[in-house]
Image (tube, rainbow, N blue to C red; front, side):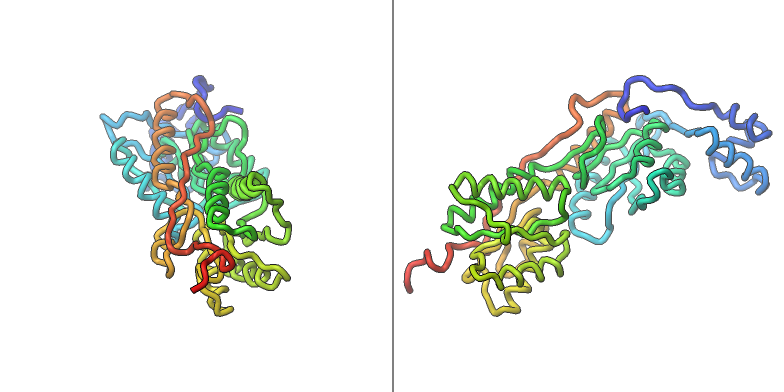
Length: 352
């Protein structure tokens, strides 16, 4: 298997080989590759089958002095402010590099032995020089397809540990979990819960590990009943908070591993006629615009989404130019942004 960023690769079949396989001339095969309409349907079918069978890839040279190179940005969803921050970072860095960007949602997960052919074939047909994947969960077959066709790619905040050699960019999630928990400990909280996202994902596991480490450093054992998972879903987070409030000894503060889930926590507290931070302190993670718009404004851990995206694009450009990054994992620092959603627990406040 050829891994993205390798210095030497084996050349694939030429267009002449494809034309001979399909029984057509090289100019006719070129018309099919370039999407020309003046080709008979049966001829197009034979050429297309030969292209797939032989694994032909149209690979443009990366030379922005001649023409702007095209890259793909593949996002998990186009409907979130998280994606908006990533788009902003990619757009700014792409402008500086003289690149054009195609944004799409996908590729869909498929059977492990068959990659998403339609999406991948479109990627090569439009001549993309590289791909950025945001929050992607690629199948082994999709990794293998990209490597076989020598398409450089970088993962932005991958959900799971990527295969060896795959380049990725993320945030210092463990340190973020430590910072959030230490902030609450510093205010005097000792009953601190965590509402995490999806089990066994890289970011979620690191944030919860940071939470536990901060508790241990303060001489506290984490309580299993205080650890909940809501799958990064706002409604599920609301339900988790209700369950925490129903415990014999409910927490006085909660670290929520995404700002969107924190909004669900706000909703649950309002349903119980409890106030933030008077009755419970809340810390989020991400520092999305929603954190500033919430009432009260949400204390949260900022991960530099735009900078992560821009860093990933710059790494991709280096790979497109034939360089191999020194390391495969780049982590950018997180920091706590203190706002109005945290305060000392009620028992620690001076009497009015």
